Length: 138
Image (cartoon, rainbow, N blue to C red; front, top):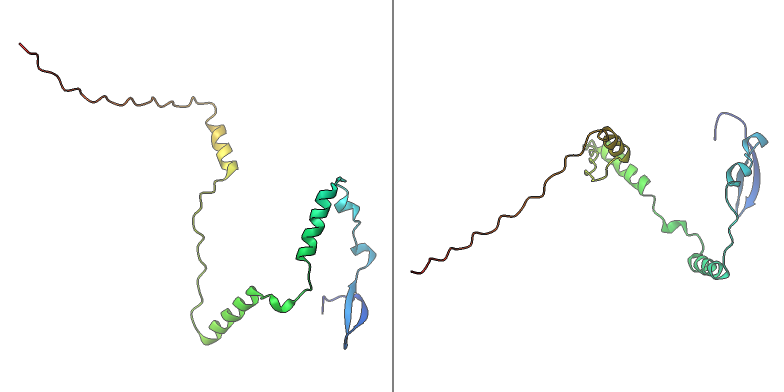
């Protein structure tokens, strides 16, 4: 069941069964111009088009769903099995701290300090090593 309201579907014979496709009412279908009008027409060179065709041909193939594993479902089944056995649930890992800074916070800080003169650190001069004094000869 999709929802609590009626839906119109189209039935199509497929192998030994029927496949149902949900049909949309006109008010549910949006005009494509609302989404694609902003896309500019771009001229593509023949070389670029040939390269794109080559890549698509190389990557094309028949869809084989058995090659894909649903990691989410597997993890969920393992979690349910642990819960049924009464084993403790794993705790969520805390994300490792990162060096990412908030640009907005950095901008706000720089604006706050804009009226104050920046303190300029004076360069530290390296001390010269003391030269050994020569004894005056008499």
